[in-house]
Picture 1 (spheres, rainbow, N blue to C red):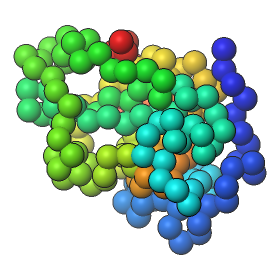
Picture 2 (cartoon, one colour):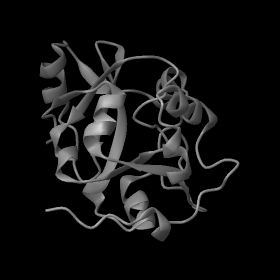
Picture 3 (tube, rainbow, N blue to C red):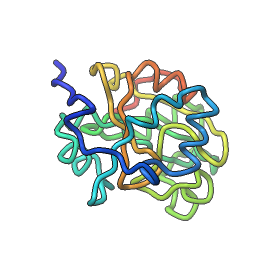
Picture 4 (tube, one colour):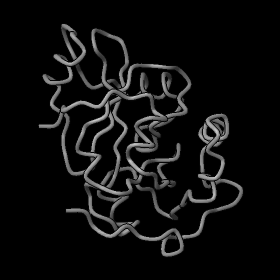
Length: 174
């Protein structure tokens, strides 16, 4: 069951000059999604965790799309997961056919994606990598993801988000 998704008008209004991270704004524009930028919402307080984002937006925790970076045999991989669930690294390891999968360290995440933990968007990274999206994201008509900073999020239909992220749809939640 999905919760009602707040309309863009019920969310805080975007900050015109800095709602989205510039790299994310450029990526969105390059993907032909410039109409998404006015829907980016900026909050006065950081929404580094899925719970903080859900509280700020007023949506179910599971309607948050977490962008998590793991290292599969030392190679970064992005996993998109609903905010209420945890990633099962063993399932990720099997999905990728890797020997070992671990959480990537913060400095690796920033260097590889160009974003800090808590603000990683599902696409628009500094480097391309393999992307896995957990099927649980499809339980909602709209999910909310980081727009490149811990202060900004954007809404998107999950299938569209998964397609633009170039993600493989998988089952990797605990």
